[in-house]
Structure formats: structure tokens, C-alpha cells
Image 1 (cartoon, rainbow, N blue to C red):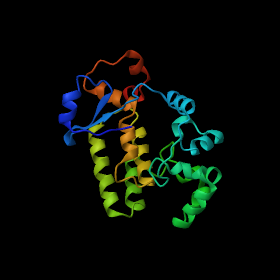
Image 2: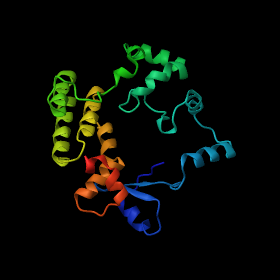
Image 3: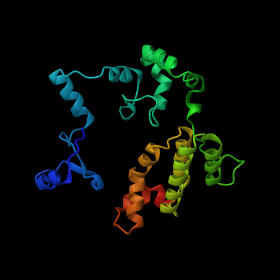
Image 4: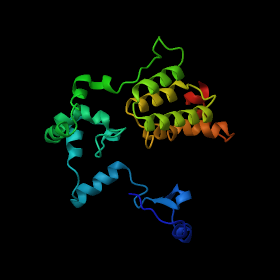
Length: 224
């Protein structure tokens, strides 16, 4: 749960509030989490103990074998949700039928399966670098000029800010994935990569912060 308040309200309460974080300070937005210390088990325990209504699609995903971190109920035609189309026909057949009528061609993913969204583990042999591969896909796969320009600008910025990072192919594979789903609006995949613990730790290490030895030894971006 997120509640957005103006900075003046936060300043009046910040000494008493330990469960808030900065959202977008430039816009005066902050995030508040009333159940800050709850894990997903606490949430489901409260739901069942109090008989609260909830979306039963979660039950179907659980029965199908979804991992907790993959249980998502939201827009299916979204950068981080496309993989759920692989299972929609079995979990929600009526929704699947309506979706295929509304978006012709969406059923192709049932035939392509995981290959539809798969990024190569290794650099394809016809390219000399991940950057060359990324830029080739950007030129030839992204037809919308606005999305292509947005992605190119973001890629150039990340290339500059993460120059010298260990295992750079990890970043380039996320860029390739962004091209495949044409994530040129909010850059969800790239923001998730930047916010990941190993990338955050690399940034801290790069600016000279003290990092625990165990994190230094296990971070591929620091050790290459």
C-alpha cells in the first residue's frame, strides 16, 4: 500500500514515522507502508483469520505451482507480466478467450512458449559484442520511432554510468529483453535491474562505501 503526501506533511510527521520512504522528492512524493514489517505469510494469515475477501486467482496460481514472487495480478500486456500469458489459458480460460478476441495474434505465444521472451545466454556468434547485438536489435525490431529513441537514450546513459562494471553482459541481456518487449516507456526491466541488490552494492562500492566482505566476494559486478 502506497500513500503519497506532500513534503510539508511529511516534514511535520517525519520524526514520528519510521515506516516511510522517499518516493519522488522532486515532486514531493513519499511512500508509507502501514504494515511495513509484514511478510507475505503475515498478509495471508490475516486474510484467512479475519475472512477478508481477496482475489481467488491467487489460489489458482498456487495450485498451478507458481512461486510466490511470480504471483502477479495486473495488466497482462505489461513488460514484466508477459510470461503469465503462457499459463493464462489453463488458469483463466475465459479471460484467455476474451483476450485473444481483443488482441489478435496474442495466441502465438502458446506456440512459441518460452522462446518468445528468451534472451540468449551467450552472445550470438555473428556479433562481436553485446553492444553490437543490442544495437542491431534496436534498429531492426523496434518500429516505433519514439520507443526506439527512448531506449537508445536510456542505453547510452546506462553505458556511461555503468562503465567498468563487472559482468556487463548481465546489463546488456536486460537491455535486449527490454527491446523484445519494447519497454521504452517506464523502462520497467531496466529499473528493476538497477534496483537489484547486486547492482546497488556495486554503486556503493564504486563510490567508496564500506561493503561487507561476504557481499564483495559474491557480487559478480565487483568480481567480474
